[in-house]
Each structure stands twice: as C-alpha cells, then as structure tokens.
Length: 475
Image (tube, rainbow, N blue to C red):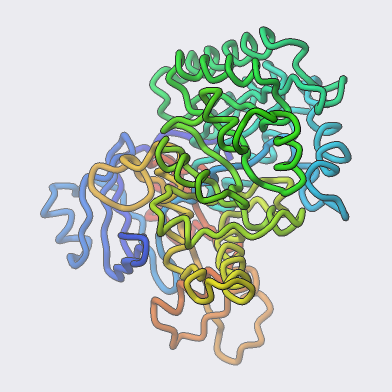
C-alpha cells in the first residue's frame, strides 16, 4: 500500500512495549499515546481510560485506535545495514565465504541495476517487504548507478519509510571491470550527484537522507577513500562501510594497505571514521581498533544472520557494549538470509550464547532478550542519528510503531484458521512478559498487523480492520 498523511489526531490505546534502557523493557497494559497530525507524540498516559484521556487533553475529536487481546504497540525496527539491490539473492550464499560470494552472487546482480525497470521492480518489492516486517528505518546500500540510487530514494520517500540511501563507491581492481567506478573523480562526482538529488527531494531529511558509501577498503584505492572522506565532511553526511567482517578480508586489507597499522587505521587515516560513520560487522577487531573507533565516535552494525551464513564469525557484542560502543542491528541482505530485524534479534541472542559456550567469556558474552530488543530500536536509532526522534514512546518523539497481534488459541485448539495470525500460540494464561518473549523467539511478519512512520500508516494487513474505529483509521 502507498503511504498517506494521517487524517486526524489519533489516540492509540491498549498495551505498548518499548525499551527504556539497555536492560529494561516497559510493558504498559493500559496505555494511551496521543499523536498529532504531524506524527509527533503529544502525550503518553499509563492509567487513564479513553474518555478520561480525551477529556484531560481536550482531544474529543481524535481518532481512537483500540487494541485488545494479545495485541500491543512496539517501536518500529531500525535496520542499520542492508543491501537493497541484493534482495533477489536472499538465501543464496551456497558454500562461499565473503570474497567468493561477492564475485559469484553480488557483483553480477548489482551490475544489472543499469536497467531502471529491473531496479524499480526489486526496490519496490524490497521496501514493501521490509515494511511488512516492521522496519520503519533502513540504512540502504544501493549500487554504483546514480539513476537507480535516486530511484530507491524516491521509492522510500513515496512509501514513507525512513532511509539512508547510499550510492556505492568502488574503484579498485578488486571489483570486476564490468562493475566499478572508472576513476576517483567519477566516484566522487556520482556520489555528490546522488547526495544532491536526495537532498532536493527531502530538503529537511525528514524521511530520506544521503549516506556516503565506500563499499569497503579493498574495493577503494587509498586516493578514493581520502576523496570520499573529504566529500562526506564537506556535505556533513553520514558514511557507511564494512569493517573486519572476515579473516580473509582482513588479510587482503593488510596486503593492499601495507603502511596501515590495521583495518581500522586504514579508515582512520583516510578520514572515514567520524561520529556519523556506521561500520558493519566489526567481528575481529583488536583492542586497539576498538579504542580508535570509540574515540572517533563511530557506530557499529551487528549482522548476526549474515555473519553466520557466510561463516564470517561471531561478533563479541556484549564486550563491545560494555566498552561503550553504539550498536544497532542489521539484516545485511543478502549475506543475511532474511529481511527481518526480529530474526536478527533472535540470532544476536543465539550468537552471544555460542560465544558463551566457546570462549573464555562464558556467561559474560550473553545478550538478554531485553538487550537485543534495545539494539533493534533505540540502539539502531542512535546509530543512524535519530535517537532524539524515534526508538521509543516518549512525548516529543515521532510515532514510528508497529502493531503486533499474537492472536489466540481457540477452545479445543483444533481450528486451522488460527494459524493465519502467525506461528505464536497464545493459550490465555501467559503474562505480558511471556507474551513478548514468545513473539521474540517465534514471531514473524504475520504478527505485524500495521506499521506507522511519523504517524502515517505505511503498511497494514486485513487483520488491522479489527482495530479501526468506525473505519476512520484507514488512510
């Protein structure tokens, strides 16, 4: 469905759940969130019924959206690292590791985006797919093609999904001749052109923003990295790239940049590490590299599904959090096999438990359910520079949310239609913390009944009809 502006002030009533710290979820069973016509949260009530809320705030004309049963509001997910043009390859990684996988699957697919019709089909599908999984914000890698990159920004803006959209820079011999920037000047000029276009369609950056995107150190020459770093500084733009994903990649970086102390040092000495830099993976960082990243204020994107799928390793996220790093989650499609951040919440927890079993850290390596959900929302918001706007339900923030409906098991337990509500079975005796845990470990997009960005309904399923008041909640 296409996004449209909210038609009135809205009061969202029922249970809402959000992180209030890294280790604590708030579950409010009788809440009311008032959202104005601009998508801003004006009030949050935790005890009053709807009539009392309307009276207190003089919002009698507001549209109510009621929740009941096993449904709750949760902040929109934030995907801090994903490759939109790789969507058709999702699940195709075979027996390859990172460098082989790039040559076998990635570069051939991305190079085909010179065909704008093909790009449009894939990009429209992927934005719709991510929205259906509750992703309200995504940091997208595009391709080297300026028209297709601009098209992705157009689609995100039209659908109402927040996005950082980046034209990929890659000019070294590591990239195939059929798919690379032909010169440093071209790489910079095309990145500037895409940056200018994205800012022209959304001057305030309310929905879409440009992000300067050197693919990773091996795909760029030293001169290209330096010039791209200068461009990012001149444009005051975010930067996204990869770091320390795979041991073979790290060895290649050492070979290509012999004068640099480390992979991190390559970026640091070429102006790539800034407080607006998002570094994906960060699996095999040394202690010195961690300190440098922390000192520069750069953020990390943890991509557990991808890290396992292409056998890159297990990032020590618990350690990195303890050190003070800013961290969010990324799907890293198509190294990652699923466009769902919820899937990566689960795998972040599993990865931490594998580390607990296999390393000297023991239980100190484990992430809790609460911590993983924080990374998916407030952590991601901090990574993409939106912590003041999204990630939780507080007055002054913008209403980016998903309606999660867990359904219920009917008496007798044999009605097949109950499975339309998704894979989570609720028997009626679960506490609210148990309901949330069941969703985290067994839920999927069938439970994501509706999604809002800045108060605009940008995705809905037929089940959302149950929560509309007099049909007026539908744009």
